[in-house]
Length: 83
Image (cartoon, rainbow, N blue to C red; front, side, top):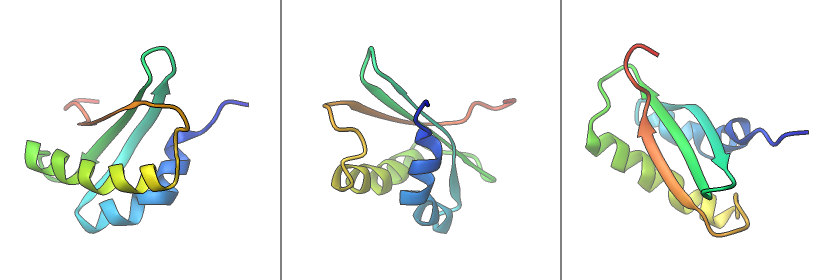
C-alpha cells in the first residue's frame, strides 16, 4: 500500500497552518529526486511571505517527527490558480 503523505502531514501540521489561514492541498514525495512537495492553498492570495511562513511551520515539525527518514529537500509552494 502506498503511503498517504498528505493525510499524515495534515495530522502533524494542519491545525497550525489553518490558524494562519492556509491548508495543505497536496503532499507527495518523489523518491528519485528526494523532494517532499507540499502544496499550500488559502482563500487569500498566497504571497511569498505566506509560503515562507508555511515553510517555517512545517519544517521543524516534520524534522522532529522524522517524517522522511532519509535526507530530502522540502519544497513548499502555493497551488496554481485555476487548479
